[in-house]
Amino acid sequence: MRLRLWADDRPSIPAMGPCFMCRRGYLAVVAVGELTTNSGGPGYQALDVPLYACRACESWLLLLGADAQRSAVRPYVATGHPH
Image (cartoon, rainbow, N blue to C red):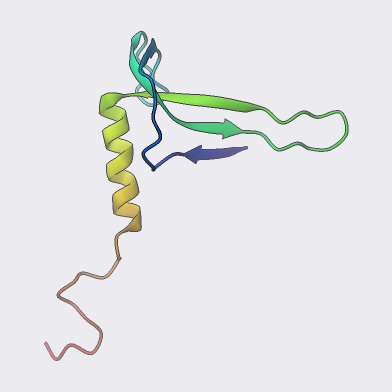
C-alpha cells in the first residue's frame, strides 16, 4: 500500500464526512490524498481510496510537510563555524 498526500493547491470541494486523522464523523472535510494498493499481477486490481481530513487536521498535515522539507541544520550553526 502507498499513501500519497497532496501538498499542492488542488481545488477541493468541502463535503460532510469522517476525518481519517482524528476519526471524528460528520465534519466538513476536504480531500487531502489517497491510499493506493499495488496491482499485484493477474487477478489483482489496483484500488485507490480517497482520504478526507477536517480543516484542523489538514492544517496539521501542512505543518508536518513544511517541517519535513526544512533543513535539519540550524541556520546559525554552519559547517566550519569557529564558535
